[in-house]
Amino acid sequence: MKYLPFALCALFNPVIAFASDFERGYTAKATGVILLYLIFCGWIIWRHRKKTALNRQADQADSSLRNSHSILVAYASQTGNAELIARKTAESLKTTALSLETLPLSAIDATTLQDFSRILFVVSTTGEGDAPDNAADFQQNLMQSNINLSHLQYGILALGDSSYTFFCGFGHALDAWLQSTHALPLFDLVAVDHLDDGALRHWQYQLGLLAHNTEMPDWETPVYQPWTLVARSQLNQGSAGAPVFHLKLASQKKNMQWQAGDIAEIGPRNSQQAVTQFLTRLALDSTLAVSAGATTLADALLEKLLPHDEASWKALSGLDAEAILRTLKNLPHREYSIASIPQDQHLELLIRQTHYADGRPGIGSGWLTQHAAVGGDIALRIRENTAFHLPTHNIPLILIGNGTGIAGLRAHLKARITSGHLQNMLIFGERNAGHDFYFKDELHTWLEQGSLTKLATAFSRDQAEKTYVQDVVRSLAGEIKNWVQNGAAIYVCGSATGMAPAVHNQLLEILGELTVANLTASGRYRRDVY
Image (cartoon, rainbow, N blue to C red):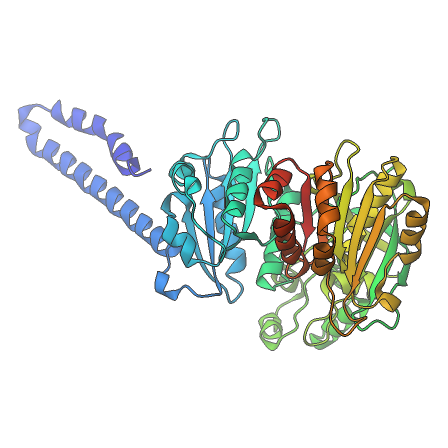
């Protein structure tokens, strides 16, 4: 790229040749043409250098401003896709109070890695697992070093092509190296096949969690299918925690398929009450026909992110209905682990009801647990989540999770039992056994039938000294080690901020770094954390 201005100037070489063909009497004119040519080349070079300098300033903020809230977005790009997504990632995060820098891997050295406590990598793979050109030095030098990055938390978006043997090979190599340096993943690697929009939305979902911004808009709205909410019941009456609901949904299309480990993407809606309050405050007619989907204003507002602070309300003041709809962003999607298998005839979810600090219900949980009518329509899309699918052959399986993370683990147990794979261990934690032991009867039935080999629980508030999932993992060190030596896989589902890293550290203590690395590389250690 640095030679681009000279290449553009070279296009004008015929001008010089033309000028040189003038007879001697036209020397002055020829000189003028050449002078204009030189001025043009100078302008092109100046403009290019100015643009490069501005990009460098935007990418490389003053390192003295780095702090505990700083995030580096690093990219390795061959054709430009990774760089584009890295910049979109940074733009999404800039809506928060986070300070950001964006750099190619070619500009990152050991000092840079030490300067940041959080780094998001967006990396492509070329050919059969190779690093892009602008990551070659990083791979050959830094990734061969013994640097300690125990202070670092990271996330990886890996772009690739599944038609190649080593799909997202460089991304996986980077992940393995970072774990070997004792860096801790914020969430598991997100693999993107041919720029799949579902995987990119999952990356955006993780960005929202990282930035504590649950209203971050989707880059591209999913295409949902219509489902019906068949049943909804609260499972933790009297709990010290927020209400948890078990939902059953039926597809309006026949023979919908998914695998244990897959994700339900939900298109939330506002409540009718919230839309009515919005229309009343702005004195708008709910029945007004609008161009959005040939519907009424009230219907169009069901899918919009409504204002909840004075600045947002002020921005809408004086606008007509069409302008308001153009100004308001669409409600972002929500993701939930599927808690059932197709043989159950229903898609089941386990959802904890959440609230904002001002008391408003969460966008997704409020819709599904409070506002959506039983018997009403739910916009839903199933996203294949191959990173959390079951092993393809019959090996022992250790399932570890907390809270509503048991949803995905329950689906795995159902799939395993249906297939006759009965060597299953479940370690589960919540607050109180009397209120928060989700699917207790079902689990005990499987235990009695021999479909579940071992069930170990950690109910943190049932005793004076709090006991958590990681404590149970530590107490079962011998059994876990024996199971792994006999070929077991380990699947973890639940909280990314507390349980998952604590369990990961316990597994490192029990099994050793090399074994955990080998389990990860072979697909026998998988996580779905949020």
